[in-house]
Image (cartoon, rainbow, N blue to C red; front, side):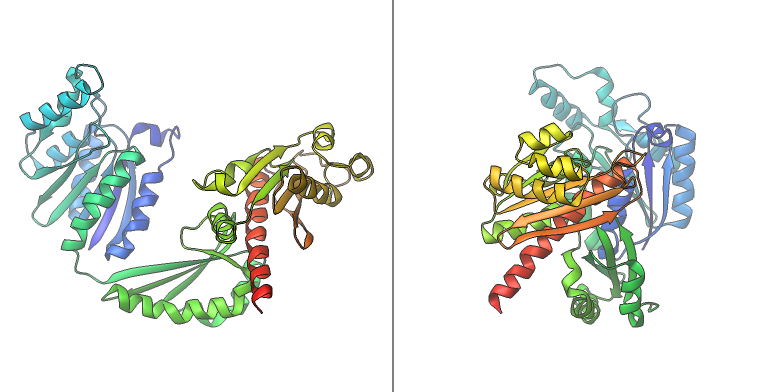
Length: 415
C-alpha cells in the first residue's frame, strides 16, 4: 500500500517547531509493509489542507495526519477532511459528555470551543485518545483511508501503538519490510565501505551506510512476504558485519550511547562518574536520559575553569603545565571523577570550544580519557568547531568508548 504523511501547523512552516512526527511515523511504516511516498507540511489554512488531502487521495491508499485536532479556530484538520470528502460534520453527544467529564476531573468547566472536538462525519469514526482531549479520526471511503492523529507526541505515539498500528496490520497484505541498524564507532565511513564492499549495491537485502553523530551506522533493509523470511535475509549480512567489524560495534537499532553503556554497567554491577569542560554538562545530561541511571551514575562535575578543576581533584601541576584543554588534563579529570565519586569508571572530557583555539590547539579539538580498573585509556579527536557538535560528538564518543572498553574487558576475562 502507498502512503503519505501530512504534518499540519503553520508553526512548522515558520520553523518554530520541528516536525518529529513525520519522521517517527515514517520509521513505523516499513515493518507494516506500507510504502511511504510523500511527506508534506501544510499550514493552518482550510483550502490548502483540503486540497492536499484531495491530491493525496488521488495518488495514495493511506494518508496519515498529525496536528490540527485542537479546539481553536486554526485547528482545521477535521474540517479539511470533511471538505475533501464532501461531508458535513455533526456533533456526537457521547463525546461531548466525555469531554465534560475530562474537564470536571480537573476542576473546571469545558470551554465552549472544545465542542468542535466532538464533531464527526459519516465516513469517519473516532480514535480514542486517553492522553488528551482530541480524539483522532479514522476516515475511510472508496478504498482510501485518512488517519488523523493529534500533534503532541505524548498523545500521538500511544494512539499509534495501541490503536492505529494494530488496525493497519489487519488490512495490509503487501510484503513486509524489516530493518536492522548496526552502529559502529572507530572506523571511517570509507574504511567500512571498503571492508563491506561486496554487500553494497544489492537491492534486497539492501545495505546502506550513514555517518551519524554517534558513529557510522549500517542499515540492512529486507523485503519479503513475511517478517520471518525478511529476517532470514538480513541474518547473513548482519553476521558478516559482526565478523568484520565486531570490535567497532557498540549498539543496534534504536539503541543510544547512553542506553548501551547503561545496560553494560547494570549487567556487571558497575558504576561511573564524569568530569567535563568543553561539553558543558552535555555528557552528564545524556547519561541521565536513561531511567535507570541512578543505579550506576555516581554524579558529574562541570569544571569550566582551571580553579573548578583543581577544586575537584585535578592536580594544579597538570593544569599549570599543560592547560585545561589537554590530554593530561582529561586523564587527570577522569581519575579525579573516579576517585572523588567512588566509581568503577571515570570519564574526563577536555577540549577547545572557543572559535579562536586554546593553548596551541585548534577549535574543535577534544580529549577524552576513561579511568578504570585497568588504568587510563586516552583518545584525541577533532570535530567541526560548532558548539553543539563538540558537545554531542564528545559525549557520544566517550560513552561508546566506555561501552567498548567494558565489552573488551569482559571478553578478555572469559578467554
